[in-house]
Image (tube, rainbow, N blue to C red; front, side, top):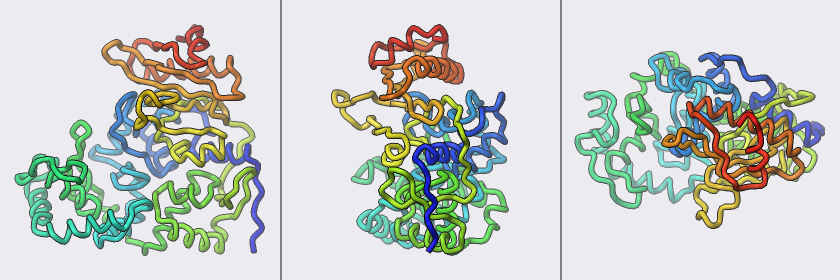
Length: 410
């Protein structure tokens, strides 16, 4: 039996942040290469429609690269020479092309009607099974129409139908295109605003993606588990399950194999109740020197239990909480300073008034007030410029708001 590596909580924190790309300074000017390298390092960018500040998938790159040009992400995501694809990764996600073969088992699971992601239960899968069984003719017609007419939005189909029913109010066309997307027969060819425009994978993905061999499900899950651990440095089973939403039994089997082969090391992290696993290549820098605002959908904080275990930071996205019950605000970003989450700010882009609104600012217990306010003020000004806004406006809510207002950089 392999003896677990003992890791202090402080070391685990630095290890996790280094794995996420916070061990290096932001480049003076980010290039396409920086964007692609960051996506490869994270393994996934979660797509979300919320646009209070900026679309969620643009923000993790900003946190690591600073004021980069968002057109660089558009180019690798939707351009003619794209190097990524869209699929169900963590949630709806942008993933590097190298990961495409690793998700084909998920596409096949969706085709056969098996639960294809962790958290998608048998009832949900059964619903899709019944849909595919009863709608074969319509699904063929949708695929044929896109093949013949070219890329189409769901509403552009000749028999799109109206929004209706219990399936999130989706039309017949949206149901069909989303099912065909899940099984891999369609992919995202473009976006119109935030609307997905569907096309055939062979017309969108480069030849090397199609020609890549398809691994077995076990080999694919093994690779995804290793990729997730590389992106986290050190993690427990539930962290690894959550990263790509792979069913837990699959991840546990992959870990057993990886540990046996020496590709993953068992570990014990100070303060963690669950066993941990360490990537052999994980770095543990002596210091993390960074100041970054993290989106609610950033991998550093997207799993509440991990943020609490690593940082002592209890984080809940309050978008779906009724306004009177919100504690910190609607769209709250944790502020990473060094290796601690030192504050949280509720941000909003106010285009009408050309301002980045700080609707609330709260200091975390134990954080240095002066140092946090100074660093946060600088970071807010950087974000303001990145968003193309003229000023930062701090509202009088939260115990850090007054300190921010007194900073000359704002």
